[in-house]
Length: 119
Image 1 (cartoon, rainbow, N blue to C red):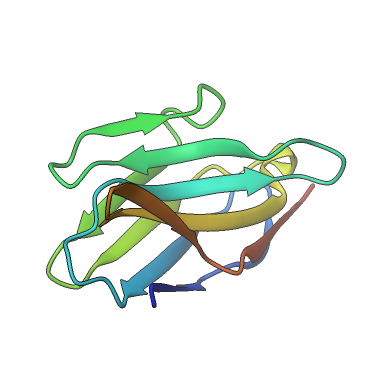
Image 2: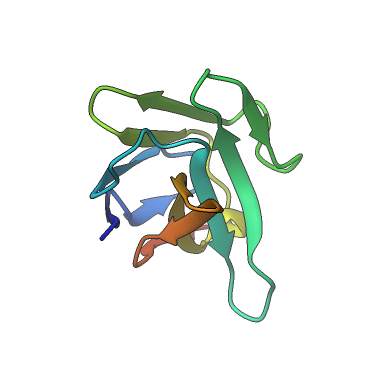
């Protein structure tokens, strides 16, 4: 069974930085896309950043230039470096990972980690 374990959330002042990590395990095959969604109170879950197994990245417009996503394929781990944090970044951040599961692909999710940015 695929399992994602997140770490690195917390409370930080505006302008500060945090680094999230997510370690995936349990797939017989390599993970495809991995990344982070986030959900703020009263809002829909949105993609913050994603990265393919080949290293191609995509970001929400609101985080471009401040967040950097990376991954270590050997460790099946994805990272999110968050700089210049704003109160609007406050949300629960959920890691996801896509993996082959006959006849197609499936997505597994982490339990979520809280990021709180104080003004």
